[in-house]
Length: 320
Image 1 (cartoon, rainbow, N blue to C red):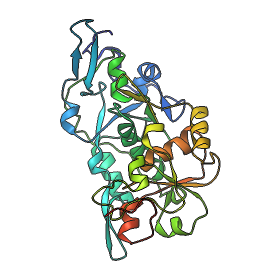
Image 2 (image 1 turned 180 degrees about the horizontal axis):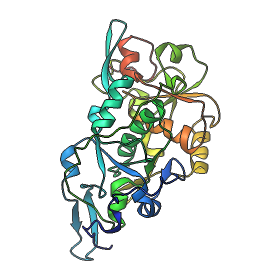
Image 3 (image 1 turned 180 degrees about the vertical axis):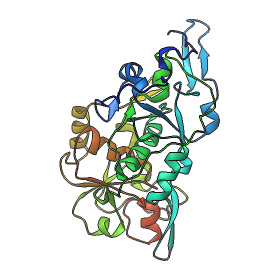
Image 4 (image 1 turned 30 degrees about the horizontal axis):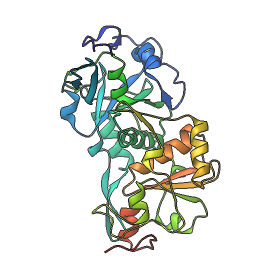
């Protein structure tokens, strides 16, 4: 494995924007990003801001001398930072307070501007990328950007972990505090579903959680019943990304179609994804809508947190 070069070199954003790069699709690889980094805005999607300015942690094998990535810290030079803990809010739905929801248009615009997002360049989201749940962090922000009208957005395959393992340049500089001018558009309601629509819809229901939660063997503390929504199909995190050498990567559209078929899911039929709070659901939505190309997929934003607050039916192994 090559050693990491902690120098910005050609990866630093130039002061002059030549022309906005045309994104090749919803997923970009490190080679494409390295060649186009000056014409896009790179956004680190992390839940711990301290990781943004920390050095990566490696472990050396004393026998072979090989290095293994332990913690994917730092960021691509010139990156903006979005803290995933700040992009979802608590909202009132009827008499209930539901956590982890998409903010209103004005609030989300303010959050993105505070992170420094500009209106003039495409966005490439970079998760830490050591497991599939971290890729889902990027998928959640991707979905929210799309929900508010932003189509010039992609996710870096492998995230920061893949970038590091490739031996590419990283930085530990503090994030730039300069606000941006990104604007949110009208909500795209075709991308979102609420409880009533889930209960009444004939669309396939896709449970994006781990199988023990799907079957009712475990649950999160903010979900108030065990099991899954009746009739839902399981598409767990373990089958939504490959993991090799501590780097999580997306699969091909053909591979996903095979997995969907083997899971009893019709790849091209209407679907609604959900999880505990709308995080993992974004990963399943991204796979089906953006990689496979099924534009009839919606995300149930309140997911099981809202569903069980409303005391709606669940099925699975009964647990107390």
